[in-house]
Image 1 (cartoon, one colour):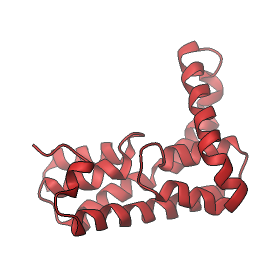
Image 2 (tube, helix red, strand yellow; image 1 turned 45 degrees about the horizontal axis):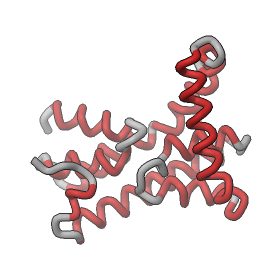
Image 3 (cartoon, one colour; image 1 turned 30 degrees about the vertical axis):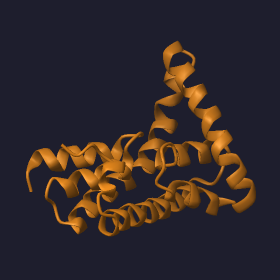
Length: 160
């Protein structure tokens, strides 16, 4: 295992835009066995939900309202999360978080799912468990697409 691929996979797994959709294919196309790519990418992405709650608990109150840039971005993100996640929560409850996070599409990952759960006032423990189950579901879907789809990797990352 080379350190550059490990660091890159972890960063992609933690990043709000790429998450598993970027982390697993990145490691896989850099020559790692699929199971190692899954463990590393999903492991990093499983850290997102606790990190979001830590940030919202300890840092959000300090930044919000004091930094206009942060306030504008946060408000836009919250509105988008509420619009995307709200109907799923009304229909499926906490299961809606799992389904939302588990679908590996842009803006449907652990970041938005956890933020949406927080905005909607859902139970922290149940939300984190649902987001974690969604991460596992998403990792399974991404991995199956990599294994079963010839050339499907170009959906996730640009292959050089």
